[in-house]
Length: 220
Image (cartoon, rainbow, N blue to C red; front, side):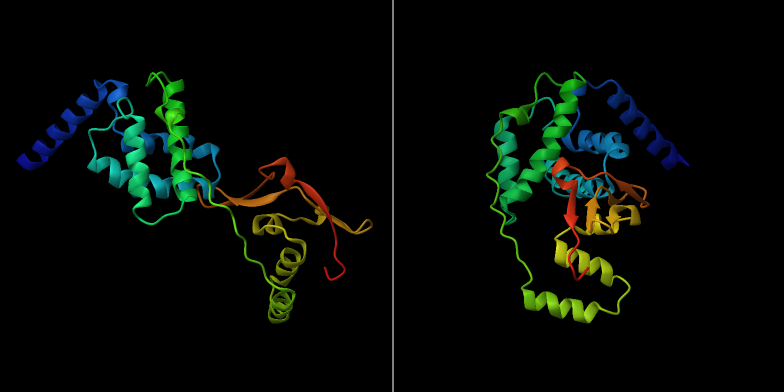
């Protein structure tokens, strides 16, 4: 019983300490975790998962080890040290850019909420983006894929993706109304997404360029 009371008193003191703490003294991991909870209803499931993995992974590890850093005292030099820490794991610049994006977004909100005087991530030069080098199936490889998948229930999706170059989420978001049999076209106007709760829903493409009408190939 004494142990329970002692634990309660310690937890209660911690709650009081946090309540009386200036916003600028909030540890970075703690703030980013709360920030993610705040934006969760407004982002797609995959985006939430990506943010959560970064926050609960390298961000948590690094900033808990450097707990003296808060949202109010972190400097551009501290941020550059964190990026060097990320690079020490052999990650590419694009990965570090993803970390920069979520942290910049979080601190931007802190600035809007008058929790900090400025966003230190505005002063940091993010790493140069790696040039994307895609890999593609050859005509022969596509032919073999179509042959193997011909009797599979997802063959139509494989055929559309393979011959028309549409994304997985775009194929899964197709409906009969998206297909114009008279003009022989397919309109990409919806994508299938997962919510943070795990359910599926359709949404408009992220960018205007993703909304497009494509000619139906003879094979489709």
